[in-house]
Image 1: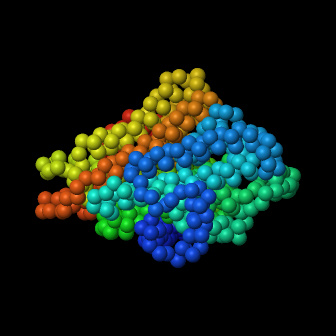
Image 2: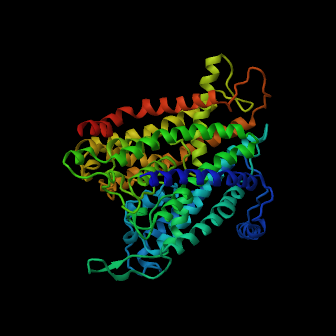
Image 3: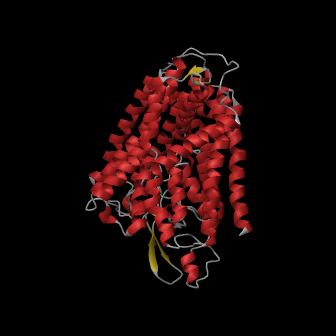
Length: 562
């Protein structure tokens, strides 16, 4: 067990050691400074600009950024619907997988478009290779979209007073070419050497250890999986996701996948500090996020390692931990660690089945998505945390009787209204969706395989995962129905774009205001005191909004087992 804990600590430390220099590199990329990869990627970028007719030197306001972002997403949605509904007639389909129905294509297109990758289909049987390649493309560009939106905030607080916040297309393209692509190539090389398939051929015939002849699905897995994790996408090439031995062959690939999904969310925190030249502020953000992360992670590991007490009371050996739904080659400790990382940073990939976790472990996974601000997804994590910073600044200003200020800009009524809409939209989408699914059981709850408290948790988890752009699920829920495809599709859309539009609008409005130099009465936002204030705001908002629902689900299930 000590070895397993050592592996978990090693994964976190490796991520931190890689995240610091990567954060500095990301800041240089977005600032337009010279980097070692300029000679490689500048010709590629010039070709894109020449073909598209885009001038990357044209500066945009925050409104123009949002128009470009939403427009390009609409184009990708229409293309995705066309691809997924016609896969059966398109090339690269050696296994003869069928086209998707309209409602499933709607859900899948939106899911991959919003960097969530909620999957109401099984990867190896539900999508052709052509479809997988298209979804891989969406995993790249949606991660780039999140990062480009975050850079608007970077720009807003680097320049004292401005309406010119860079060029959206430049930020987006650099995110894909300078950051995501080279790291994915490196990870893919590791995966290929560890035995992950990389082929366009169809199923292979093999004889298993029982002597049965079986058909084994394969495909361009080693190309798909790196961006799945690095872009905090999470969509599995196979239905079992990273619990599948061809998508996660061994403990080394498990560590690489873990570091990959954790890397950019952590690096973006430091990139923000380097970019605006306030490193102490970045460390404050990192400390708040890490404390929240540890509060959820440590109990999850302990509970999963301790095993199921109900089985122990029956005299069954639980020394390996709560192993239902987990891979022996990975173990209970590493699985418990993954379960919080993947829900906290909105990756949504799984190396074990979350539906089989202990009730309070499932609650922590839900809380990680309900908070949706500790590290968070690529780019989106900074945006979500920014909303809580604005709320904390406003509340702190009221407490000391001063006009709230953040980095030299007054936070006034307009900014607070937007921040409150964004903060309340997240619980609204989750709780209303859950309420409707339980109020109309013939549509929502009819597909549950588990009754009672756990069944309610499955419904709550599905909408929480959708609103948080996560994509993991309590898979006791049969979700490929018209109700679930359409309702979660709507939640996916709103859960993605409201938290992007709101922070970008706030940053743009603040950037336009007159810069006020720091004085004796200025609230310091890079201190541990302010960090505690931000943490308190996050806890209060999440606790007040979601505690009743959690009490009806995982908490009630926990007490029913005692």
